[in-house]
Length: 156
Image 1 (cartoon, rainbow, N blue to C red):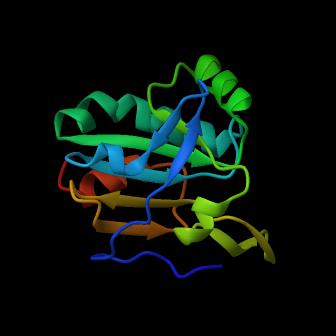
Image 2: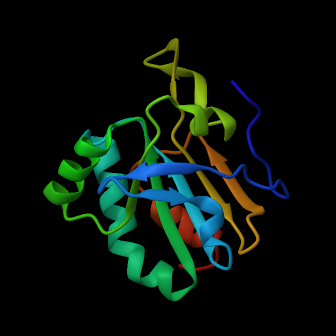
């Protein structure tokens, strides 16, 4: 596992495929604040709750200059089904080899039901318009996370 990102770090750039098959490059979003959140699997209860919460807040977040990217190891086809089933408005990105998750500190050892396992660490990293980390949260809870994030960003 690589080190976790911290406030003041420049986020590693990436290009990932979205649920439509298009490529999204992080650096192409310079000039906007970006919320990048990592989640284990589309269409699971916690991940669905979190994605729906981000979608419900999307207009407000965009109004404050934020773009939201959700990253999981799921293939684009599964992400497309997830978007359609849940009417999601956020950008869903596929990181099947977990390279971006690893570079951002969102993949590695974690506790699951008391056991240490390797997997996706539910995380959220907020970047300013220059791609510098302004907030980094790891091992977040799916339920209530977006409301807490909004409070942490002064958007509540």
